Length: 83
Image 1 (cartoon, rainbow, N blue to C red):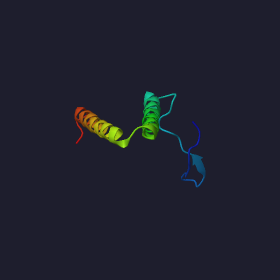
Image 2 (image 1 turned 90 degrees about the horizontal axis):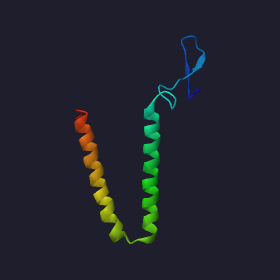
Image 3 (image 1 turned 120 degrees about the horizontal axis):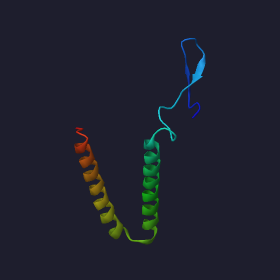
């Protein structure tokens, strides 16, 4: 990984900023990439579903999905002992 942005050093010269983690050093990079791709696909197919189905069918399904995401994030927060 090369320079993402430039920052000034104490001598006044610009030096490249380094990423703290990347695809070759951390598995979290790939988890983030897969999660982002899944999030994109979720919204893409949700919008495609609104083209052919009435909203009275889809809106309750979206509301149920949002509750499950809320419960899932609450469980993860509890397991990590976060407030």
